[in-house]
Length: 108
Length: 425
Image 1 (cartoon, one colour):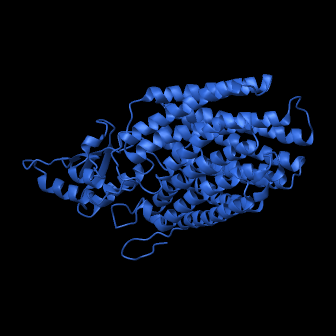
Image 2 (cartoon, each protein chain N blue to C red):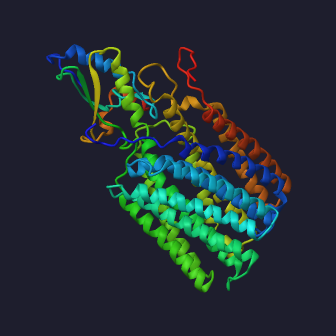
Image 3 (tube, chains in turn purple, cyan):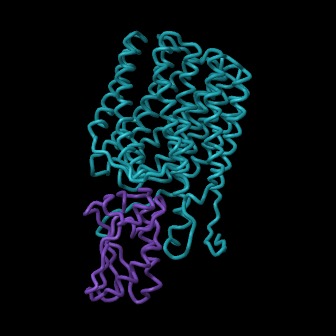
């Protein structure tokens, strides 16, 4: 996920993205940002952060743990906003969405 | 959440008791094998061999597979498990039934207790099947993995149904056909129906998930489903009405073609995998395939010669193929459900262990290598009817079973911890 420098919420999104690096996919041992699971961060609504993301496997048994992790990771830096996870299956996650770091960690 | 069901892991009682009991039965199997080592060089229809086979098939194989299936059904069907309490009740029936059956076979006490054991296992299989059908029925998407899981549950019911009738027949003979002939049908309905199709269904979902590999060759899976079932149905029907004949080899060929289709699919996933590093748990998979291949190559030998070949064949299937898979997959499934219940709410908040930190990697490594040493030794001992080699291999096997049990218990009794050293519970 890339953040434009012109984005009105550039600072907030950068901070949120840094927080999300702390959420690890427990099976792959890689954070969800480098896995390319985070599609969008929306700060436009008052008091809310809407994280649009996906999972590498639909109905992943650890999906609940990962989405809870997202909310936990954002709670400290954004005490006045409630994090909501908007889970989507489109676009379907694929390996091209991995970052360079993610690919390296998977042994590419 | 846009109304998307992301999946709640099944309750601990639906999964953990199966792994705990399975690990204990695995150690029991090792000890019984060591004691009954001389029987391994004789005919397979003997009380102790029957007890050993049922310890392996029910207490070990089916026990762990039930637990793993309850954990993985939601992933395969993309729906929550129908009922966790029902899963736990099936555990109680399966455990009690297995103990009764193993005990009565070992001391060869035919009659009421043996039939009761068989009945309890039939009830366990029925409860399992209800959970499978109810979970799968609400699955919107057609999935070939789901078809394998459903067909395997039907084969399980048939296998145990025939087994129950065989137990009755031992005390009150009523079959107008040979008990041994029906026993062969019972065994192969279990092996090629229950175990093979369940393992096929689970693996085609899990292996791509673990390796991050995708195959587009779905035709192979459809062919596998048709060939595996066609081969087995023909074998059982012809075998029941006309007895085992040369046609058996034709049906075996169909079934083996179905197995090859499945293996080709898994090989394609492996080739296309993104995750290049293969962990120790996944290393058990190719080992299990080697034993499956050996057992398939033995089919004509068993058909023409029987005797020792039949024991080697059964050993390759239960202690080779099924055991190697379970020994590896335990550490790809059990730590996750335990981790989930300990750390789900702490994730992203504090530094916490990963699922792989819940077990000892060193013990897993020892387990793997002891297994790699003991299995070929055991097969050599069986082929050459060498009791000393069999005993040495089974001693190593017992050490391996203790190590496996220790590692499973380490996961089950894990205490929540965070990396500042605090213990929360």
